[in-house]
Length: 447
Image (cartoon, rainbow, N blue to C red; front, side, top):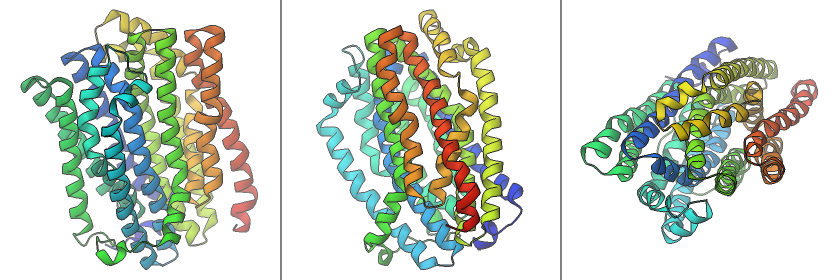
């Protein structure tokens, strides 16, 4: 099937649903896996194991950040190239992305093994948590290149308009992981190492399926050596556009480190475990919004490349409306039913007692989170690296980190959680300031 008719559809609501629904389902399934994985770890190993995974989470985010750096930058370039009819540039973008993954993945794996304990202690591991974090990371980091390939491939596949295929790949990883988790954790009695082994096997299986797709003839992109020749102009554009995704994920990693440090300072190990649960729940809430953003990206990129700016604006409006709707639903569930959510993970009354008031404070600005996420991806889809980068920096680096460092000093533990809604509110204001001139001037004038 040709990809151009898919993205050339001028019925934006139909096209956005067609591309976003599979992405949303796929992301929701992945988020569900994270929830189920945490449940298995909690029930089978205990609260300290959850805390161990929470400590490793920043490193996982760093690997995800590198995959998004290459994947989102490449996807934006491919979509715009297809819209402009330049398929050769799209092929070279794909090939150069594969080379970057191999080089960066090997470097990160080596550095992680060399400095593993130093990193874990730096990220907030206490003496009790460190053994669990070390066992989990020691296995997960061995597949850094494979994980980056999956993230990049999913973005590239969506950039062609094959949202269903991207969804199936994500579902494949999640389902295999959910099946293998109890086998390795309970059946083989491997504990937290079993959870890590299940994750790696699921990732490798998904990577193989992605390779098969690219070589099947369905995709217009193929893994061919002649496209692996490095073109620095393409690489620089990919890195510039993808930098906002990279910064957003790296910022998330830095935030998790800062929060774990703050929780260790103002609380205890159970607060770190509670944040581990909250993180899983938040990922489940945000994934549908991310699915909408991922479905929106190729539509905006293609139509912007084709000069159809009215369709670009229509897509942005609809995506923001849907993202805000999901944000509001998540807020209601998290704020009014926190005890029910925590009991899914654990029966530990102390952990639940810490978690309920914490999540209620953290989610106060929940209804506006979707607006900011969509705004960031909008500029990335248009190839506008600087505003996208600024939006990625605004919430987590410019606002959240300083508030997180200052507010708990004044009011203690509640300040850790209140830092989130305050930064969300300020980031939404910045998003609005950048979106208004985009609609009034840039998309009208064709800049």
